Structure formats: C-alpha cells, structure tokens
Amino acid sequence: MVISDGELKQAGVGITAILGPMDQAVRLPAAIHKVSLSAQQVSQEMQGVEVSGFIVWTVNRVGDGPFKCYRYLEGLSGDALREASSHIQGMAESIIRHQVANLRLQEVITNRTLLRNKVREEMHSIVQGWGIWLETVEVTDVRVLSSSVFDDLQTEYRQQLRGQAEQARIAGTRAINLERARAEDEVERARDELVQERERLELWGRLELERERAKVADETHLLELEKLKRRREVELQEVAIEGEVARRRAEEQAAVQLVNSKAELTDLKERLEVEKGMSGASLQRVAVEAAKEVFKSLPLHDVRLYHTAGDAGQGLQGLIPGLSHLQDALQDSKKEH
Image 1 (cartoon, one colour):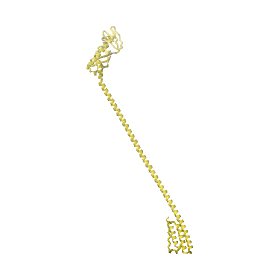
Image 2 (cartoon, rainbow, N blue to C red):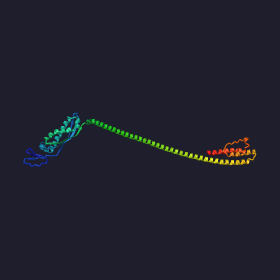
Image 3 (cartoon, helix red, strand yellow):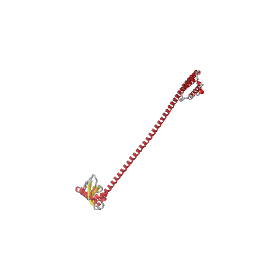
Image 4 (tube, rainbow, N blue to C red):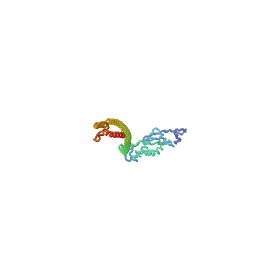
C-alpha cells in the first residue's frame, strides 16, 4: 500500500510501486486471523447458557479498506493486532448475549444459525469501517449451565426417543413374531401337504396291491379251474377206460360163459344120447345132477329147480328146452353190454 500526503495512492496484494519523494510504503499482513469467543447469558426463562464459537477475519482488500485498517488499527502492528482481535471478540460476545437474552432456551439450543447470522449482520457494517473483512462467524457449542435443566430439556426427547425405540422394538418383535408365525404356518402347511401326499401314496399303494392281489386271485382261480377241468377230463378218461375195460371184461366173461355153456350143452346132449337107454329113476337123477352142474357155472345167485311127476317121463329131454332158453338169455345179456 502506498500513501501520499495522508491519502491512499495505491493498494494491493503483492504489488510493486515506484515511490516519490512524498510517498510512503506501508505493508499490512494479508493472512487471516482467528478469534475464539465464549459468552454466558440467561435466556428468557432465566436459564444460564454458554455459547462458544470463533470468528475468522482479515484486512479488507476492497477499496480503501487497507488504508482504514492502517489508520484505525495502527497498521496491525503486534499490539494493534491483539487489540483488533479483542475488539472483535468483545463485540461478538456482546451481540450473542443480547440475542440469547431475547430468545427462548429452546431457540438458543436449536437455532445456532440465527445467532451466527445476527453476529455477522451487526458486526459487518462496523468492522468494515475499521478496514476488516469477516470471513466467517461460527457457533461451535451451546451449553446449558444447569445440568438439571439440561437433563429436563432432554427428558422429553429422551422419552420421545425411548418411545420411538420401544415402538421400533415392539414393531420389530411384532414383525419377527409375524414372520415366525408365517414361517411356522408354511412349515405346518408343508408338513400337512407331506402327510396328505404320503397318505395318498399309501392309499394308491394299497389300491395297487389290492389290484395285484385280485389279479393273482383271478389267475389262481383260473389255474384251479384249469386243474379241475383237466382232473375232470382225466377222471372222465379214467371212467371211460374203466368202463371200456369193464365192458370188455364182461364181454370176455360172457363169451367164456357162452363157450362153457355150449360145451356143457354139448356134453348134456351127449349124455342124453347115452342115457336114453336108462331107466326112469336113473334118468331123473342124472338129469338133476346135470342141471346142477349147468346152473353152477352160470352167474346166478339163487337157483331153484321144481320137478313135477308129469315131467318125470321126459327125463333130460324136459331140461333141454330150458337150457335152450338160458342160452338165448345169455346172448341177449352180451348184446346189452
């Protein structure tokens, strides 16, 4: 910065200038400066509050800002820099105290932007006259001095948070219970479906088994019928064979008996011829004996001979017609068999 005859001639950051005989070069620090602040004040509810923060400032580089800083702050020499920071700190704390005294405790705690903006607005026009530029104003902490009051202030929020947490816990528990119940229902439903499917398979299995048993029973019945049919055929064949054998045996026996009867008849005829010359009593005796021999060889159970006196004269001749009839009866019996 160049000053000539008490007036600002040239200013800038890092400038180069040619000085005249009446010119004066002044160097000002371009660095920023930080000022911490802390103010205690009671709110409208008469509750003590401590507000902490900081302000960052530097030399105003616009217009004649550097010249004002040089004029009013003695060029920001060592003591002047400390005094400038002290003035800024005191002014900011005063503004904060004024704002806190007119605000409710809840607003002070929650609305830090309001405090910061108020400090910046009220200080900005003042410090510009000093050649100072406020880079930023920040409120870092608002603390209630009474711990019991602070705890009471937090009670509502704590209760609210506790209620929200409890509701969240209840909702979570309810959701977990519902999910567990839903899962148990699904498991139970799946178990029931599995049991029903198993029972259905068992029923179908039993039905198939009964069908197989019925088929086996039918096959067994058909086999038994086939066996009975074959047995009946065999028995019929056996009966037929036995009948044929019996018939042939009867035929053979009848033939043998016929041959025997013919032989006996021939023998009787020969005897008759022999006995023609015999007496009546001898002839009768011989006839009876011959008849006994004839009938003994015949298949008869009971034979009774009756002789009357009128037949005595006939002798064997009276027996011959009867033997002839017997021979005819044997031949008829053979035809029937």
